[in-house]
Length: 279
Image (cartoon, rainbow, N blue to C red; front, side):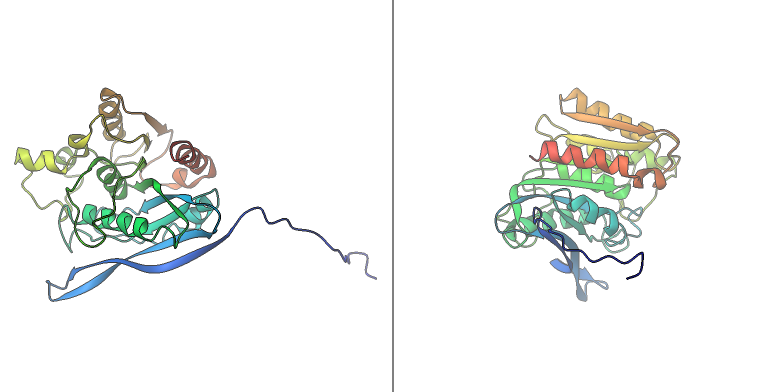
């Protein structure tokens, strides 16, 4: 027998479920091509097949300045997050050239209602939902988490709630009027008049902060020149003013959406946050 040959019998104990990726799940439909046709709004769901337990669900919202997005872009990281004890759904939404504010918020809320309606299929705990996203997705994360009640609810499964119990926005803009006025961000998604005070209030996440807001974990790069860290700090301060459980983490040397945010220590912090708040 060769010196490097080996013949073994081992035992593997089954102490965790098998995870699956359910791709291109249609959760809603929306008007497309100038209102003449419809298109599916879809999500990719990573879930454990487990008939014994129910798992917290985390919604992931990809960024891209309301001009581009790809729900599959971060699947390698989301799969790792799921295996820490979550169902994770990466959600498609309408971009600025398709439909202006508040269309994307309506879409994210519809996705949450769909998942609650199909909780048994995906081993989801209906009472434990979190939401997270980057940049434009961070903005949508905050708006989804803060806006409660019937506002921006449309479509199917309206008997289900779109409320979430924890939120983790990454490098999010929280004062859109300031961003627009500084020419840093002029997406078609915000089609209203930046000089209209009521419209400005409507599009800014800070407007919706109340004492009923869920816990927040906020990430921001210290060297971010696209969405300055002052935006995240402003949002954090507004949460603290309402006595909301909030944590703000500024990453030294990190710009906007760079590799710092895709290192394991940051995902460990986020996973621990959701484990604590959704337990």
